[in-house]
Length: 223
Ligand code: DX5
Ligand code: ZN
Image: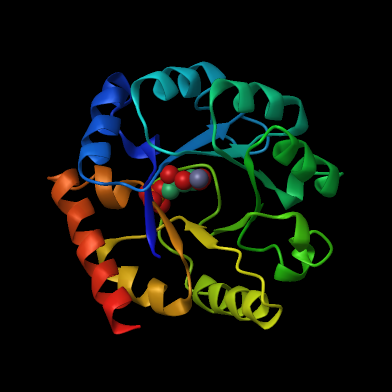
């Protein structure tokens, strides 16, 4: 099942709830929330209070992507705030195995994120602890960047590697997903698509999300 998680990073921050309600009503599968600390990435965004507030006002699955140094110190806060999925970067975790289990002990789905330059084999020793893998398909820090072409092949290699081990772990991708490359990215093997500017920076975000859903349905009917 292909899933689409709009990323509020590209929403109008003065009217975030309107953006969330709009994609919820249009049938989004989840909401991607980018947490940046100004250290791990050179940008700042939201804290756990925003997650708690959205949890109260929305029934969407909340997918929290931690782009922070020392992610462990924030896992508890975001879990208590109502995150459903929490992902941490392999590049930032000294004790990745421990941190993934901390997320799962809090009853949340645990994901590992890999930056574009980080090889897939970094997952080898932790893959059995992981509920989903998030591949960055741009360098993290900002919305609205171009998809990095080398990531097409990386998605396929990751998917093949997981299937070869009979591991039904979904592959989520994040960055540069647009209507124009969506079909190709489904073909590459991705399962979950984070889309920021590709939805919110279009004239009619709800209509664009429905267009993504139609393309996904066409691919699912082919299989
Ligand atoms: C980038 C973030 C993404 C961002 C993607 O660091 O992790 O989630 O919102 O934005 P688009 O879809 O515009 O590339
Ligand atoms: Zn993200």
